[in-house]
Length: 192
Length: 273
Image (cartoon, rainbow over all chains, first blue to last red; front, side):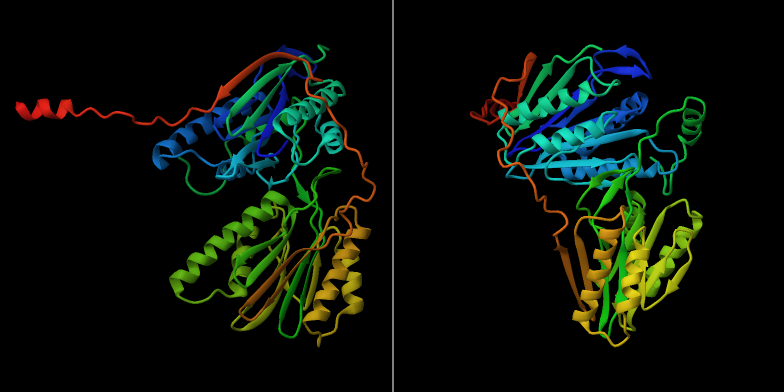
């Protein structure tokens, strides 16, 4: 979700195989650099593979360009990687959130599993509870939220949606990215 | 590093996942769409709605469906969003390189052949239905391209899920001696008809008017459908601290190191030797 010169990503931490819960601490939101956060949902093996793949690409980018990648460029990189597997795709839905440029304008991007990007100004959602999340974010979202309020809003949205989704839950983590750094908070969710 | 073309490495795994394990595949974003093109006396008008859907949910209420192939050749796309984006992007790239190597400004017919050959190679698996329009030195051109690679050249075209609604308006209002304003208004009405009557189309109206050496893009010309009328006046307020936190971790951005003192003693030692 985007606020005033800040963005936040929130996700749950359950890893399961259909109805069985396998792990309670699977992290699906990764920091690309000081300005970009990247989250994925979907098939865990593809999440892990792509995590390593993007880590490698970003290290190479940093060495070659001698600067950090901007969130917009990273989003296009993600889309291209996903589209290259157009027939035989990775089963993931990624979300990129970051602060773009000198003015730290919030940047949000979501793509589908084959890399069709969209750049909304307010919020992006993904995962098994995405329809609930869409509804609750649409209700609670306000423009130009400060980081504290953004944290409250995105947490309440996630908790509300997770309660209505059997496959999500068992802990959640929220990252708020501002120009001063990233604040990570863990929340208690229902353990069922 | 992989060479050009698509990568089929994961195809077998995906087939097994879907058939044996009944994996619920994430949905692709489609552009249900109404796209329209009309030729008028001086050029071409292209129009599109702005809704992108993911199943029954609206993924993007304001996406751009009219893509640039070259300065005066534009293309509206319906079908799978990733396919239309990447196909038009790829052909735009090829056309730019071609025009640089031939030293001539690109023709609409060239773009048509490139698109048609590309899509036919994949036998319809790349789901991109396109309305290609533009003005080159031979005059205004308008073509429709189907996902399997067949093309038609017509004075007015509509494609996408809302094509029937749009075609009804076009058939009623089109005449071959239209001027720019009439053509713009006709395309606008046709897209509006698609937005209102077709469930897969919605959002705002985008128009693109191409004439000889001139192009005007009217983004979100008509936004009457997307302004939410009944919005609750007082927004929900969450007081600070209303969410209980288990753990908190703050990572401060590393500041760039500033060089305060530079010692030159090492250089002096070397010189003595």
